[in-house]
Length: 334
Image 1 (cartoon, rainbow, N blue to C red):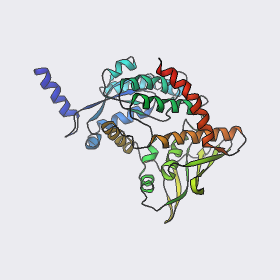
Image 2 (cartoon, rainbow, N blue to C red):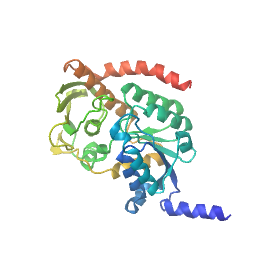
Image 3 (tube, helix red, strand yellow):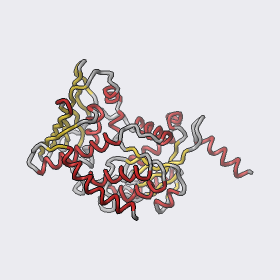
Image 4 (cartoon, rainbow, N blue to C red):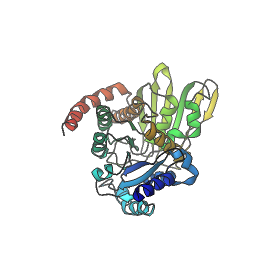
């Protein structure tokens, strides 16, 4: 009886006023997102909006061969311990201690393998960017999630900037076109844009919506410029920055005027959406839109390989879906 009373008291102390504690598990401690997201969920200033969600356990393994990621794990693991997060030695051990999962590994390549046991467990899953290291694996993750009937959600924090959300809600008129920009350093183990360009592209697709048909890419050592054509002839562009000063932003062209959008407004708005997703089981972003972003990036890489030729998203999506069928079948049988 005493143990029950103690546990009940702990739940009341750590959860919101009207929510029981929802135990969040984290996979991967090689990104500052892991630390920042955990802190936000513990911050008294954000308690009302965290809906009783709290990171209680983490499996630290992340990338095994990206030095910038590998070197962070010991420091970030210690930081999590200092926030009373239990460190476990496997994903299976994590799943026994939590209700929902955040996949935070900075390296997208192991995401499919890391997501599989979570999907099989039936636990709702947030996947930090990139969803995976290839379009093929991204499709496979969404197909397996559908097979196991598990809600998944992935997004950059740039999607939830205040200005971008105003445009998305139609508060500035009907969108005719947009130009966005963000840092775009490359990582040799990932497709060019998956590693960091995804941030500015998330802003672009939040503004423009889905329906992109094709993309053309111009590239140099310090810059990428992608020109996408949407249904109805609307044009959206992205500038990926490697030389000069970094920044996030963009210009939006609507029926009511020209305005700025795309600034980074912190992680808190994204974390609010993640905990809403954990409670509702409904992704705030359609799966089809997320997949379209990754098809856009793959088509942009294909445009680069073809010397800047225009590439249709349907072409790369059809090829990846065909290959994903075999991979999904293999994973279902494991």
